[in-house]
Image (cartoon, rainbow, N blue to C red):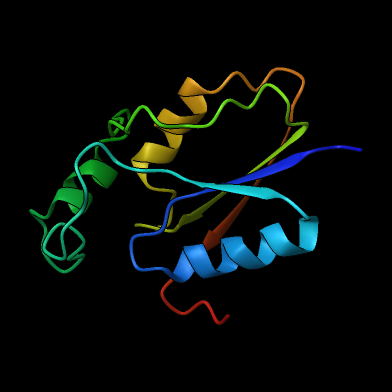
Length: 119
């Protein structure tokens, strides 16, 4: 039987709640993605052109450091990554996660949430 892991990042718990639902439906394990430097409310203020997330999202080749606590995915066949949408794209840390994982031979799926996501 194929094993599935749901990896997610959730700044406001919206993505976490959907990740829990996805994991339950897929009988999957879950793990949270943690930025090396946690985001504050000020960092997430999309109305502020100088906020951390605004700057990160507008630097097209940027990566955001993550904690070195991603699970070993060796025994998983399927990897599902959940994330919010920031400025119409995934947070830059999702690229960092994908860079860090050996996804060769894995089935990869992603899902995204927004502030208006209902759960």
